[in-house]
Length: 190
Ligand SMILES: Cc1cc2nc3c(=O)[nH]c(=O)nc-3n(C[C@H](O)[C@H](O)[C@H](O)COP(=O)(O)O)c2cc1C
Image (cartoon, rainbow, N blue to C red; front, side):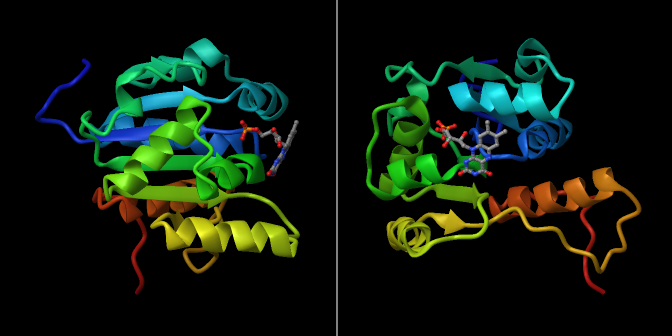
């Protein structure tokens, strides 16, 4: 499945902020949309996945087309010569935000994100923390100045979600659409 030139390729990183299910749902939606996914799960995300979901890592990795370890700094997606449409970090911890904002590229998540920025590709950081201190806000400003899209995973209510799944799906679908991947099922106003 690697390097299929006819398919859109998206890098998806799940980091150790709360909301692991959002990243997992993104994998499912991207699979349905026939998008090739390149997945990196951080070490701390393994903890949140165990804490917050009933999914095994193997089950989640099976949803992706290509899987990488965060330590694999020599992976294809660590190079700008490997073409992708962009990257979504969902959820994005403050630690990873800080690494991206400061171009501190000592793991594959931060390096692949930095590559997207330097190559002018979309990078969405679904930063999940609350409340935010001024240092967090400064980091978001810094990352945005380098071209990152700061998109905290916030729920919407005007489509009247009936359950957590419907709420989750809208959050995730909007983030994916921001990568300019059209999804037929997303709620549109009015
Ligand atoms: C259950 C749990 C929930 C967490 N929630 C958050 C969060 O919402 N936001 C955040 O920035 N960090 C959160 N953390 C802390 C991060 O996991 C920690 O800072 C970690 O170093 C992030 O590393 P990573 O970005 O490489 O995944 C949480 C940790 C745990 C165990």
